[in-house]
Length: 217
Image (cartoon, rainbow, N blue to C red; front, side, top):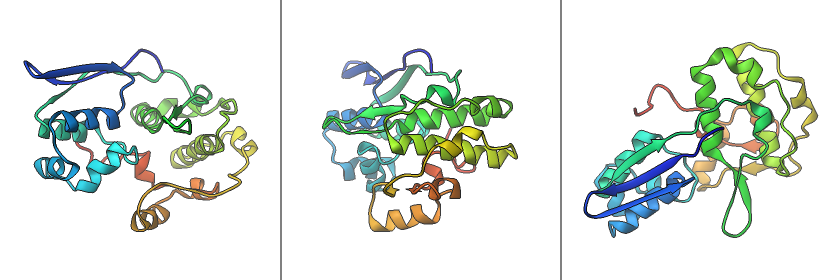
């Protein structure tokens, strides 16, 4: 990944804020609080479920740019993207794809992982080279298994041989399931790619791979 993303929300004469590395959860929370709206009020204005707003703010859902812009607009602001990260590396460069929460715990950088998969979707001829190099141990069992499982899935989908390094990544010592209500988790179980399930990860495919049929531009 290269470059610094600069994301802004604002409207002339009222409020404006720009920040490097501000993620979707922070941008949406800022806009909603600035508009003095509850989660339900913002959801009603945007015509989406309140759970959608809540999941984005809790980093349980990574919205498309179109969805985020729609929610920001419902708060009376405008989403502005000054620059974007571009992906020019490979899986070997993703060992640091982690974010640190205020309490010190870490979790995968879902936005960055999705950006990689979006890039490979647009440049499929680069897939084999992108997954060839083994990432260094990240210190996170979950991220190590995610990278291995993702590499195996995109290999299988493309009809390519799986990279040999994925066999060296042991499955999770304890199963992991994406946060959510019991109903959400049941859906995640039914939609988890087998390449992740065998590693002890329960995560619906659409949390990483966009559904291109319903993608909002």
